[in-house]
Amino acid sequence: MTNARAVDEPPLDAETLAFLTRSGLRRLWTAARTRLERNGLQPAGTIRLQDLDAGEREALSLLLARPVTGPTVMIRLPDLDTRLRASAVGRGLAATLTELGPPLTDRRAARDAAATERTRLWSTAETTMAATSLTDQPWAHQWLEETRRTGSLTRQPHTTALMTITQAIQTLATLFPGTGPDPAPAAWGRGELATRTTGSAHGLDDGTLLARLVLRGIALAQGADFPTDAPGRRALWRRASVTPDEVSSTVLTYGLRPRGGTWQETALRERAEHHLETHLTLRELRILHLELPPGTRVHVCENPRVVEAAADAGCTASLICTSGSATTVVLTLLDALAAGGCAFAYHGDFDWAGIALANRVMRRYGVAEPWRMGAGDYEYLVMRAELQGTPPLPLAGPRMEAVWDSELAPTMEALGVALHEESALELLLGDLE
Image 1 (cartoon, rainbow, N blue to C red):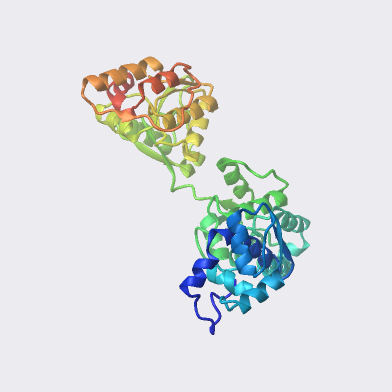
Image 2 (cartoon, rainbow, N blue to C red):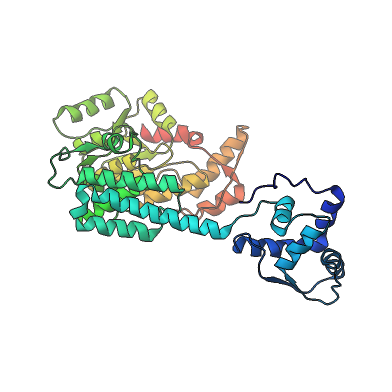
């Protein structure tokens, strides 16, 4: 970008500025700015203005010191630059446009700089890879070429792109050390690996560009498809002997009484007998093979308050809480129970987000059925809330059809009231008892 104003150039006086900013010159400055930014900020070439109105013709005649009478005018930028310097403006075209604002951008220089940065980026990537064990692995060259072709890095700031590709190469070289003298351990924790190659335990967190690049490399190295969901990504990490964090996310459960004689199954049964909720991590689900009697009806709710109330009431039914979203750990547990022959009864909020979450569960599991989630249930709860004097909560957001009841969405839209799960708590507890 150009300097705001040359050091020896005073600001334009008010009269000159008022003339230059009159509406009749607006199209001229726009066209001149576009041409200068393309020309490396040099006043070269010609611009053509068409369909001039009377105000534009008058303003251009005064500026150019020649009559402009027709509907079209051709203006040579070198002549305009000379005219501005010789007039009361007292400076060239580029300086005038800068004064009028915003600052000019040398687009040619910007393109050249971007091309130079891209060349430097891929040169650094190739040099970094040549210094690692990846240089002799054909899949690595394919990975680098695919990364170049997608453009995901070049859309980032140069410093970020350079750091990301370097860390991706270092991470892959750590996972696939070849026959070097310092082979990688048999297994890594993802946080441990991230700390070693990025300096941050969160450097390889799910959803980051770096994690996506590394996973693409792992997929090519293992001859696997690139995963499209969280469980697939976790499985791919494990194929490279990397264990993702499996203890920070949990699923809230209550009343699970699995068969089996290990201490884990025994502990769950004892907690169920004592009416205590249990938070299960992904790691526990991986090592604990939950097996309930086939045909067991497991209730699934959305809000932890339902679990709390069920425990306080000493309910005996099995209950799993999605805590507002069906995360990986929730789906992992439901998948295992469905595979073991369990059936699900689902209840959630009567709002559009709640319907969307219920749809996800219903579509995923053929053994899932609605649990007090019909149009009749909704109407009854709305009427009861009104009779109790409960202030209505407006229903907001885009409409969502319920896959299990075609009448539910129209009924909700007609009444316009959102109901959280707690509004049905008394009915739910009666079912759980």
